[in-house]
Image (tube, rainbow, N blue to C red):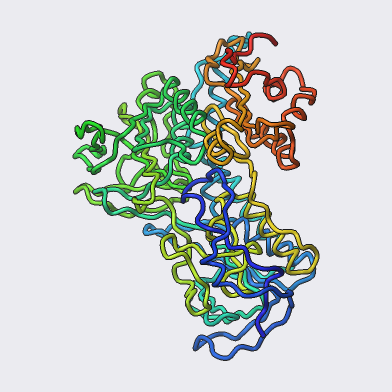
Length: 605
């Protein structure tokens, strides 16, 4: 008997672009997809005996819930279901890169995404704080950055998280299989171990949470991988902060999925503080020179003029941590600016868990892959800058990331995918076209590629399957932050989205340029520190979106996200007493609207 979802399906349409965490958008129901999904019903836990299966298998094991994928969403779902008393198994397998690289349990975020990225972002911020210290009376010597020490610290933390996930699964009696999984039929999965041994796993309910992997473009000679602009800007930001001469190439619109005024301020701040940004350009080829350096040829799309530059490292930014430095030669990750000012400590070898690509001496691409420990020899000479290309934000370019559905044999289970994105079609209950099979996280169509949304979606799904809750995941008004040197946090609609949805005359935007107190003594430039609150114009002026550019933007945005989620109005925010002196209190002091034409610069404390 078929197992049905809790309620009538509401299929989510096409969603966020592939890449690093992008700002989520609400998605309308797609009538065409609704036909793929079954009628309403109730969940029932029952293990079915299904005929057929892989030959030579070690036997069949039966579970209440089988989760395919050991990333943030899959682990959250598995742990929650096990804690609620269900028999749960997790199957996780990291497809080795062309260089044979693997990583531990925890998925993209833990191993090659959010965690290492934020730690390197923090390393860059600390460099700025050390520079500011002298203005506060501290006698500080010229800072030296030890790349190897930072790399080791980050790697150790990542490994501790890998181990922690294994321990938590064991504590909750979740069976963990390091298998490569593929469907045999709608209720059975065949897992293949490293040694080639096959095990059949059957379950009443199956959750697919395999995430995504980089897509390798072939239309750029010598290129390996690239993605969307927020990842590139984040990486370029902390590389600049660590002292590298960094160049970012942007084909069209940076941070396309975000508020465009805020995006302009982000790139403006980066350009003012040392990151070279090439706008309206696209790369044509990358070649390795005889001395081991990389020559990038690009074209200006406006003038059709070609130009070249020589770099020691070229990063094609994807939604993973992009930083891998080499094949076997001397591609090392240090800018000439660091060497010139003596801010680099030469070590025998440096290593770091990074993504990258490299060229062979003949200029052809070789061994592209994520490297968990890429070794980099010590510098012998001053080197050219690093080059970061964020990819092409548009549907006409096959770049960025693709869902990890290859090899799952979804057709044998009857699971439908979007033929354009290859993502799995899901309804409001995360159910696929097969009612007892679900998909969460980056692999699901129309879902924001954000770790917290995958985690919450996984937990709520487990609670519904265990009849502990009927709550559905709400993908509207999800906060997020771009961790550029000057952080950009946002929640809700951009100004452009609000105007498109409600009309310009019905939208009121309150804004302010402010100077963080921390910037005053060291005389830091604060011309891009900006806050914008997008509201409906008619009373009570419901807050549609909040955009904050400044220090600790993620921490600031998180609190206000709760208010917006609860339906806060402009008056609610204005009646909130601020904490003084903080940057966050400036949100509660937004008195000037764009419509007024008055200067929004904050002049008092």
